View 1 (cartoon, rainbow, N blue to C red):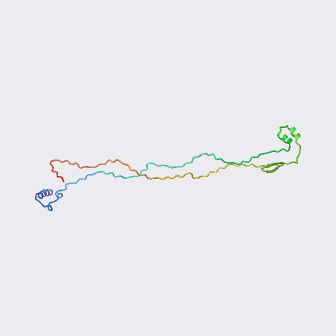
View 2: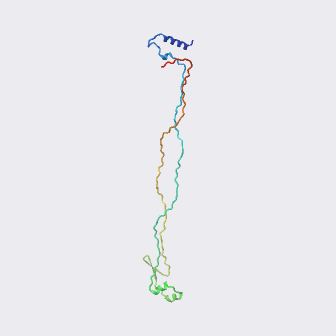
View 3: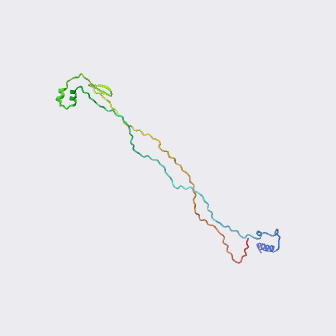
Length: 186
């Protein structure tokens, strides 16, 4: 007989004799462990990793536009006004005459000096040419750069919860009984 068989026989002998509660072995003392089975199951372990899912490229570029800027410019204009001393001089200078009529009406007199008034200044016109300088304003364009807009670029993190379906496997114990076994309710 093996030792396990002896133990079972001793347990049967001890069970048949009446014993007090303090001397009677407990139910766990009567049982012997003959094997151990672990049931396994899979559990979802969620880990996170950061993936680059896209990118944004920000550039700035220049465009050109043409605008019309009104500028008030000043320009000097020479106006020549002639005063005639008498009606014959006026008729001689404004009329249509042939060369013979002009020679007949012009009397040589070199004593008088022609006078021109420019901007209130009298200028005598003699044998030397008189230069009168005219001026005008022109627009010159200078470009200056100003900041017209400020743009802040920020990245922020938004948290959301996704539900992901995961198929997990687990083990169950199947017990197949053969014969007539006596089950006691615990």
